[in-house]
Length: 159
Image 1: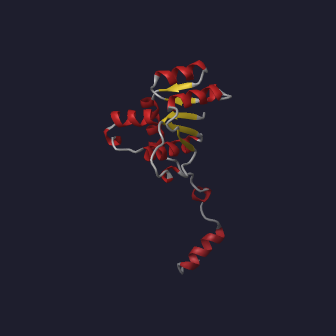
Image 2: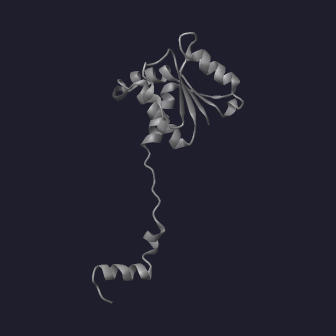
Image 3: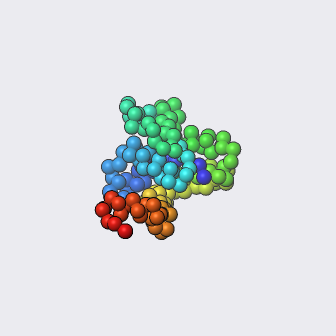
């Protein structure tokens, strides 16, 4: 499910609700969001008000996430609403914002609407899951006869 995120709305929500994230920056938020999207196999967009920092290189090469700063002539809410309206498969779309205007626009198109704090909790749970590493087949099957002979030879053990 592709995700559209109201950038500063999410950033402010996590800064207020979680002490350990009080000083998280927009770049750090995007990197965390990119890791989450990669882990769930989805793509997303995050839209921020304004022009952002002068040096935007920190936003480069973030997995599965496009970062937009809308400039001064519009606001993030309007851009997000336009993206919701233009989406060709809104039922597959997830919109993250606690803003009533954006949530209403998402619900009108039958997109999934998530409040910022709810989404953040899901993101944290997903990223805290331990990844399971598949065991090699040889671990359960044991060594082949030729491998056993090779190790015996290496350790100087005669049969």
